Length: 78
Image 1: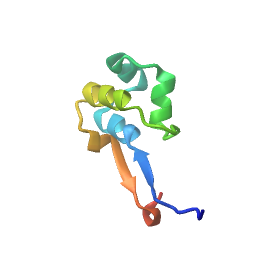
Image 2: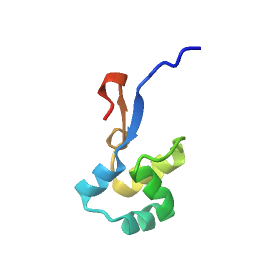
Image 3: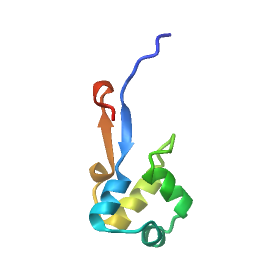
Image 4: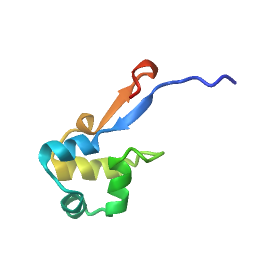
């Protein structure tokens, strides 16, 4: 089977946190999550997206799902 580049999904948590001036500690408290898990999302170091985590983040940051994730086609990867 050929390796096909389908693009990638980018988590934009760092951007949203910066825009809202929210620290990792404050977000951990609001979302009732561990800082280590938030850091993994913030640094795009996750392999599988947990929908309940995304729901917590959307609630805690009062944002939409499209504010947190984006699809980058193969030719647009950063």
